[in-house]
Length: 131
Image 1 (spheres, rainbow, N blue to C red):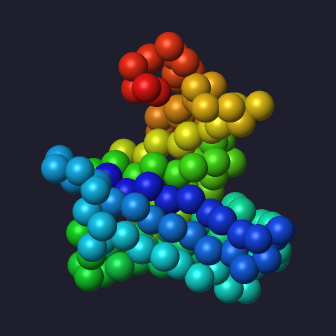
Image 2: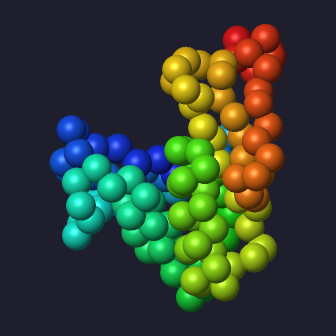
C-alpha cells in the first residue's frame, strides 16, 4: 500500500510524500519524497498529478513494483486527479482510495472514496481505529 500527500509552506516549496506499508507494517526504506516543480503555488491537484505520474511511470517501465492499493489524501479532487493519471498511463490493476478530512478537518470525520468520488464511505468516529 502506498499513501500520497501534498505539502507546502503557504503555497510555496511544494512537495509530495509517499509512505509505504506491507503486511508487516511501515516499509520506511521505500518512503519517497518528490520535489514538485513547474506547478503554480497552491495547486495541489497539479502537484498530485506530477508526483503520481513520476511514480507510476516507474511502475509501468518495470523499474518499481506496483502497490496493491494507492491512497491519496485530499478527497474527491485528488482522487479524480489520480484516476486521470491511471487513465493516461493505462493502469487498472491498483485499487485507488481517496481520503477526505471533512468540512471541519477534525479527526474522526473523514470519508473514504473507493475508486470513485460518487459514494463516500463515512467513517464512524467511535470506531476503535481512532483510539
